[in-house]
Image 1 (cartoon, rainbow, N blue to C red):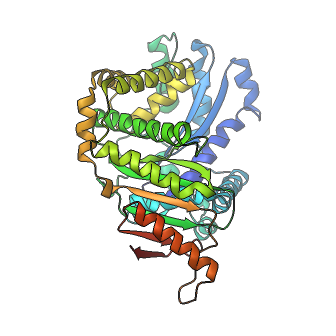
Image 2 (cartoon, one colour):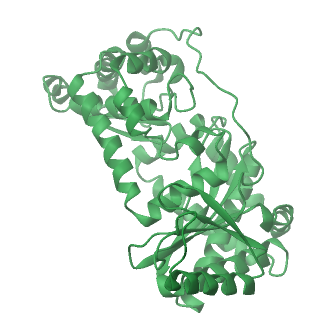
Image 3 (tube, helix red, strand yellow):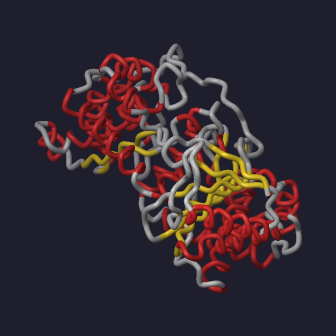
Length: 428
């Protein structure tokens, strides 16, 4: 919805999506609520990365009239000032919150290191803009977004239920009219990465919090359903192995969470795990060892392991699809990511047909030198400013870190200044 459009920008697109969602929710609060109640219809809306979804639920025969109500809201390109301000304030809140949370700061750094400064999500990882761009944002910019993206040619309608397709189609046509091919979405050329823009091991010292964070990130080109499913399995298996080793065998963490940023041409895969800051580097060394053994074939994926992962994935999908709104969300996501209408069936077919040899061959084509690791060190005393002398505490801390990284077999690592973002390479 305009997030990769250079004339719009991530921050503006995100604000605009929130306004659309808020306006859809407002249908439940103002005079239109009586009309919706009379039709026995309910509206829910939510925004997520890159698009917004609006769900209209109720008797099938009354949905076309309800669609006209929603259409009137959508095609009104006037953005109420109060909703505009609320959405902009939400963007500022997200920026401020992330700036004070160690894991969030690590995630921002990971997007920049993996995707690179030439990628829109590398320059603006949160997709919220900056304080300067939010201040300069005007209703005119939102009107430009609405003209380009708030249009039937940029929408996908998913119907779930016992419909009379003819009546539904007629009602939708009356509500939205014919699709005008003149409204073409902007598809700027962006880098398609096969390895991290800045691979290696990075240390982000933050003198706050009791938990450090170990993070892995790497990009996967999005070029076919087969590769999508294959790399999703690889990412899941990496996470399972690291989780099992860190938590069950080493007792260094309580959990591990996926770390993913999905754009239309590339997806960043990986994970983040919070650990006690006393054992942070031990956790980093363990996680790197697990991933290296997997990529370099010392501990390959077995068919039994793959089958268990596929079974768990299919169960998760089956549970998710019990909710009609989740079915709708999955279908919209599939279309937004430029897959065919049979995305879900194709995904299941590819998943069932995968063999461990397929996964191990794909792992063999990856390289540990193409990965980005971040250690958010909350036990650190902070980065030493350039040109200043280290205190004895900082000097001993740095010496201990060098010894630990040398034992891991690293040729070098990079310190990231938590205030300026400046990176300093340390050779070992």
